[in-house]
Length: 243
Image (tube, rainbow, N blue to C red; front, side, top):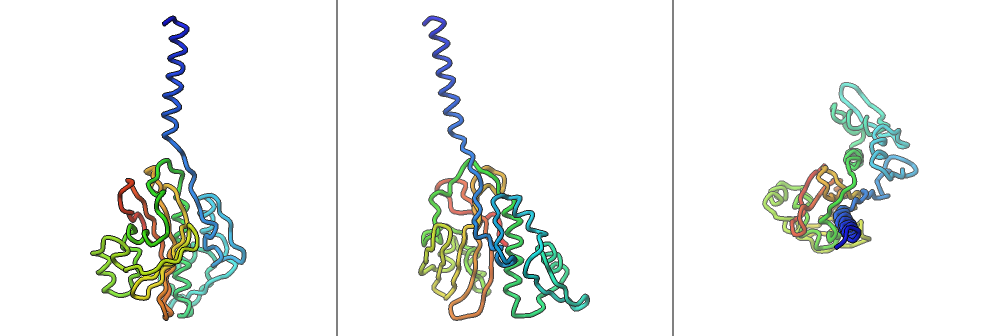
């Protein structure tokens, strides 16, 4: 092989190796659900397309203030997430008892926005086959189960997954990002996929779910947030964060 042919051969080989190497690294931007629960605070829902947008909401003034009270310091009108979290931490509580579930949901949403702000781009995923259907309950952590009684709390501790803890009977799938799960004890749990991206800086896709809980025929309601991941294709879903 003459010099010219050798150079052409090595150039071609280098090109193939370079393209093969780069093809393995696919950077995917995080996904944020447009249904970001901002309607609970603002007359017009806020559009957020970037992680920094969620950070900025922490001190943004709400259109609908919330009233809290304290035995020593009296009543306080709360107008942003920062005030809500700081005053609840200081011992303030709801001014009206019937607003307890609503204020608790506000606090969960405020905390959720802070966590969403940590979601970055990722280059590896084992979540492609994870869908919001009945199979999801068989791979989701048992913590997803609605835990109202001490009996249910203990059952979750010894259960391998959500379906074992709650015995999901029916799932109504609204779309790829939203589904409602019904178990055999009357629990109703609506799951919404809020974000996809790298939450814990390991390069692997993580997912965040906002869960709205209620019970059949009752007035109980609560909200939770779960961040889950999967580190291999055959692994169960691991719980990274819960609020």
